[in-house]
Length: 357
Ligand SMILES: [Zn+2]
Image (cartoon, rainbow, N blue to C red; front, side, top):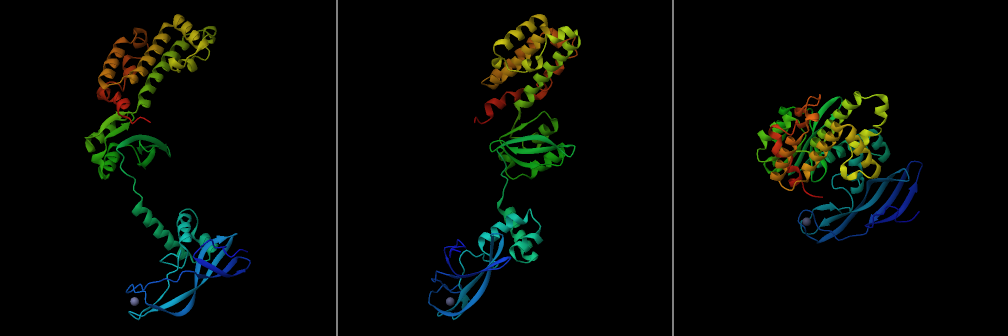
């Protein structure tokens, strides 16, 4: 076995004894330059040596005990005695720093008793390291309040929960127990730096909007584009299903793969798809009109300014063909829900405000 088995350059290994479950390693430090911890004098004399047991990470599945021949010094200036500071050893306990670091991470996912057995220490020691590790995390880990905040939801255990995210970093900041206005507003209110939030992207859930308005009035509310344009697809689907419902089996076969083609963006339609769509439009004008309405709705997001987008939205609204407005089950309200009300001015901003990446 090589003398550098410890991979700690500050130590010289003098002896290794291997047993069934353990390596007993004798070592001493190479460095001798020390100062008195009491008066910082370097006028020291060697006193006695003492063996100290330092625990380390397991090697080859065996526990490690390093028996360090530790010098004891006496300070000539203040007469106090002290042990030499052992390099790479944790200041608080007789373990290598790397063992403490590893143990902290392990202690949050494995039983203390297993770790205690594996390292050759008491469960109480593992628990202490665990406590230190958690305190350190709480002290140092800050989920910074994002300037670009996302508020959305996720279903966990059959309930929608509010998810707060950092849009710039693509990270989740927190998950709240529900998505009620009170819960969201209280959470936002406690956020440090909430007055620095510039923009909040939300889905079309009114309580989110209300909570942000109340607590972070300076932030611009933006409806996530995904949730808006999805409605255009939903509306198109309704028209498609309605038309299909009124057809004979034979006619229906003529609409093979209709969903697949209709949900595609126009710019992605090629060759046969284009011809197919054209023939459907001729045979079923409402379907063609619904597709047109969907595409024009998506195109609003190509507007370069808010004003341009609002104008486009109004034109789009006015242009909706009668057959997809009424008397179809698809009402004009359904087609434009979420774009109306106070959302209207926010929709377009997403494009102009979202950081480009
Ligand atoms: Zn001293």
